[in-house]
Length: 201
Image (cartoon, rainbow, N blue to C red; front, side, top):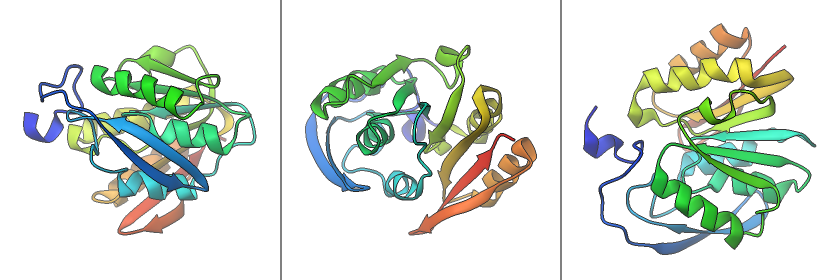
């Protein structure tokens, strides 16, 4: 695993700590984020993340889990789109955790978003969710992505869904989701990305 390609998927990034502000308009809500080096997509909201959010099937109520939350884009947007939801965000990168905590306050969703430090499902292993959503850390390797997909099944409530975005290797992601859940559908696409959904039945 080359450090240059995977530095953001580490607990303590070694890059210099600078900070700046970016803003965007996603799924009908305005958002702004403090970002820095050492986190994923530090200069703009990643296009794959935006496509995932624009096409995601967001529950009317219940619990949502954003896995590999980075500085908080997915969880914060979902919390702003539907204030009835309680959103948990899990992230391994401590710098991203610090930024996510700041960003939930900046976007006024601290009453319904909880940020947890840890790898994949470890911090929430005793919980059940209506939606698990992620732009998986593909640069960390397919073993990590596979663990994310397989682990979602056990943490979802019946009728709950896993929704992910993929570009390169999208067919292998689709096949893995079908193998784990016995179902998969494409619920959105754009700019070379596809959004996949599997439901726990």
